[in-house]
Length: 190
Image (cartoon, rainbow, N blue to C red; front, top):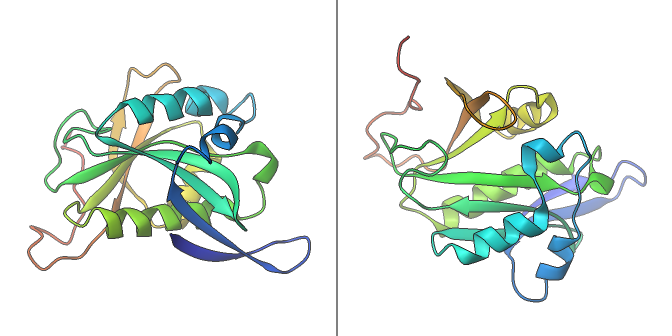
């Protein structure tokens, strides 16, 4: 499990934030996770996303834990065209359906969870160089969380989603000497 200590604001103690694959014991708790009504168009339903990930042999259904308790979920997609609909210059994983339960938000756990996700993805999927995600342009809180965790905006926008245009954000998982460039891929010139 990739773990990142995070202070709990109310009591000043430290809680470990980590990620693990969803198994039969964690699945019922993941299904009960909820986001606010305003966040739902961006993320959808945790149970639906979990079932969809479990059906897909190229996906990893992942639980986010804080202090040993399930507080969130995400899906890693290993398809070559994950998230972007096309291959990138370097092998990438897609990060999809990332959510922290609404009752756990506002405690600084989201950024720690994204960092744990990135660490885990790099460790478990060493041939992949990038983690790619799209985030709705109106989802300012999520954009800020991903940026704090080290994601960079590619400059590319995706149009056509149900909730509107989305930024393509990228995170370098590894720094292998054989990577073609130290720079993240950029959007094509317009």
